[in-house]
Structures are given as C-alpha cells and as structure tokens.
Amino acid sequence: MIHLIPDLLSAEQVTLLRELAANKEFVDGRATNAQSRVKHNQQIDQQDKEVEAAGDVVVRALFGHPLVQRTAFPRTIPAPTIARYVPGMHYGPHLDEAVLQTRPQPMRSDMSCSVFLNEPEEYEGGELEIWLGSERPRIKGRAGSAVIYPTGVIHQVLPVTAGQRLVAVTWMQSRIPSAQHRHILFHHLELMHRLGPKCDEGDKLLLESVRTNLMRLWVDP
Image 1 (cartoon, rainbow, N blue to C red):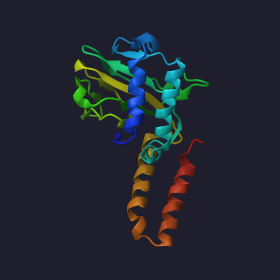
Image 2 (image 1 turned 90 degrees about the vertical axis):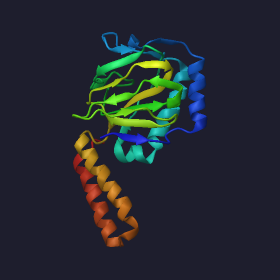
Image 3 (image 1 turned 60 degrees about the vertical axis):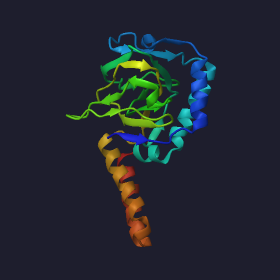
Image 4 (image 1 turned 135 degrees about the vertical axis):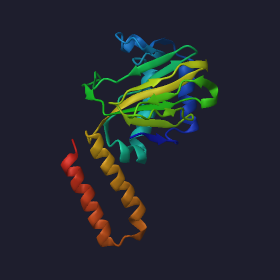
C-alpha cells in the first residue's frame, strides 16, 4: 500500500535542507552499495555532523506526522540519505535490503520513504516507479511531500533527462511487522475517524477495544 503525505515538511524546512545540499559535496551513490549495478546517483556523506542534524528534521517530521503514525506505526527511523540525480542518472529496478546496518544496531526495513526536496517542474524524468503486481504507479511529489511504501516491493527511479532531482531517503522499522496487519489497522483507524462524530460512547469503546486488542496481537514493542 502506497501512502502519499503532501505536507510532511514546511517550506522553511525544505529551504534548510536545500541550502545544506547546495553547500555540501556529493559522492557516488554506490559508496553505500558498492555491489549495485543499477544505482547511478549521488549522495552526501552521512557522517557529516551538519547533515546529521538536518536529517533529524526529517526524522522528527515523520515521527510527528499523524498519517505516518496511522500507516507505518514507526519504531525506528534512521537519519535519511540526501540523494541527487542530474541528467543521465537513474536507479534501476531493485529491492532495498531487508536488514539495514544502522547504528547503534541493525534494523529490519519494513517501509521505505522518499521525501521530495524540489518541485517536479524543476526536473524532467526522475519519477519513482513502484511495482505493485500489474500496476506500476509513477510518483513525482512536490517539495516537502513524501511517499511511503512497503520496502519489499521492486521499485526504480527513472532517468532524469533535465534539471536536478533532490530527495531525502530513509526507511522505517514498524512496531507492526506485517504489511497486511498494518493495512487492517490503518483501515480500522480510518473507520474510527469517520464514525467518531456519529458514535455514542458505547460504540466508541467497542471500536477502541478492537483497535487495542489487534495491537496486542500484532505489535512488536
């Protein structure tokens, strides 16, 4: 299930990240995936302290966004990688690693997240294509928006033919490991939200009981 978040970052936060990117050196994206034959992009060194601090802006925004909480149930979100695609660059069809070697300890990757840092009119091509069975939606979000999708699906970034694509990419370990269970809980929370004004206190209590006990069955605290 793909979730689009139109308002993850404010204009000020986007400006902060873009200014950082404009003043940092980018290296070959294969620095963090030397074996890849399909990764053709550039990224900023994640060990840079300024980059780490700026990445916290993205992490805090994700943890604090209600739609992220209802869809991903995040437990761990590592600092993002700021990546750049200029003409000729792309990231061919691939799967993200199931276990990421993050610090202080490795994490299971359940959800992938791309945060767009420039407007779609600023570059041509560069769509994120996600393979969902026979469907292959292509996503090109506005600056400050994000897309979250299951890490286990094949995806790619199509070639950029003009301009520059700038994104912050990260992953999430969910408190609900099963994508199917996350989907059920998301729909239940949406139902609670829609029915809320129409329900009496008894109905609300029953709905909350279902949610709480599903969490008890499925949560990995």
